[in-house]
Image 1 (cartoon, one colour):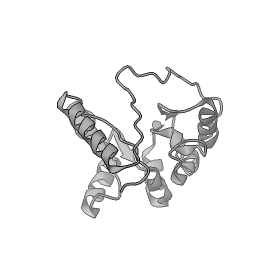
Image 2 (cartoon, helix red, strand yellow):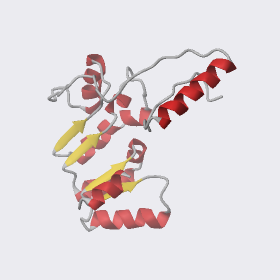
Image 3 (cartoon, helix red, strand yellow):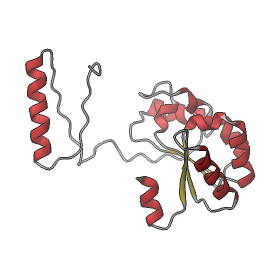
Image 4 (tube, helix red, strand yellow):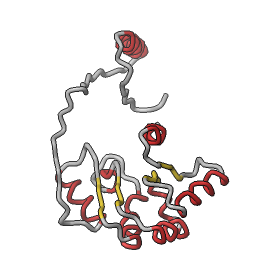
Length: 173
């Protein structure tokens, strides 16, 4: 969806990930080599591929942006080891700018993000965590009756025009 939206706005955006067929990957690489890509979405795991990193180095990177950057921190709530290897890619690519964004980083996580990316003196912009479009309700369920009750509440919520929500549970079952 993000790529489609950007392309409708005139931004030449692509994604390069494991879900693409080989022919689609070749198409993206060709567009990169020809300079037809302004924005490339890449999963952190892709930087484990030395050939891919070399390709990006030959093209030149102006901005290296890390979304959900809290995932780089061992103190973050979604730690993913591949994020730890981004520093090596940054050292090789030498982008003109580095941007790390997240909506959920405590000061300790912010410090760790900067250290892990090799930008310890980076400028930080913190606007706070409050979002007037977000709310939270906590319900504890320990039997089927309560689970059915919450399912009805979610259905009612949806009928009121609220189309987005997240339900955290102990297990997928």
